[in-house]
Structures are given as structure tokens and as C-alpha cells.
Length: 105
Image (tube, rainbow, N blue to C red):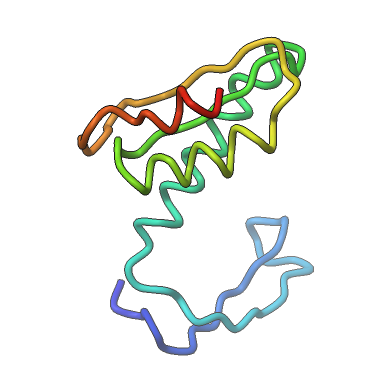
């Protein structure tokens, strides 16, 4: 909290007691909303990909406007050739129906 844009030193390691740890200097970003969204999309993609034997694509559509079309293009076409796709519109910010999704599919 309160460290965005400032050099921040973290101590990282695989042992809770600090054994074999190292110090890393980072500059936290503000806001981190877009990074959290990307993390959630990737976690959801893995949740679909692994159990389906890599046969299903996962695409999050954040809105039914330009952002949704761009996200569809980026994530659908990188997974083209799969047997099916899950198009996730949960938490969608609205807009007109994303015709680009159906035109491209």
C-alpha cells in the first residue's frame, strides 16, 4: 500500500525462515486493476484448458464494444483450432451486442 511508483525492496525465497532468500528491487504499478484482470483471465483459461485436454478455448469478453472485440481477437485466435470455446461475459461492462465476435467465428 502506498508504494506505487517508488522503488520497493522485497525479500523473496522458498523458505519461510529466510534461508537462501534474496532481495529484489521493484517499482509497483498503480493501479493494478488491469494486471488483476489478466491474472484472472489466465487462471480461468487454465481452468478450462487442462480439464478439457486442451480441446476447449476460453475467452473473456469484458464488454460488448471495442474492448470486447479486441480481447476476443487476441485470445480467440491464439487458441483457434480447438473443438469448442467458452466465451465468458461475466462482469461484462455492457455495450451493444458484439457482432464482431460472431462475424469472426
